[in-house]
Length: 24
Image (tube, rainbow, N blue to C red; front, top):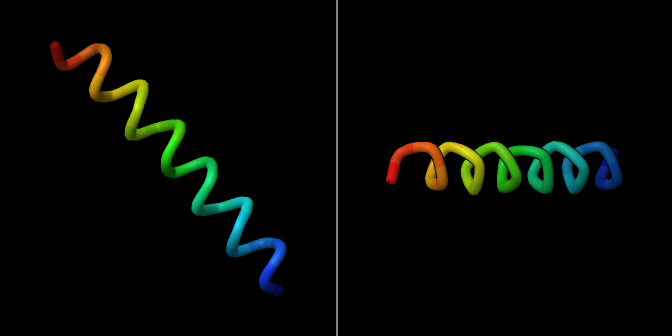
């Protein structure tokens, strides 16, 4: 389970980074 949570968090961070780039 921790691995899944870590992956989800990593994906969320990537999405946040992408959103931040496009939001500029």
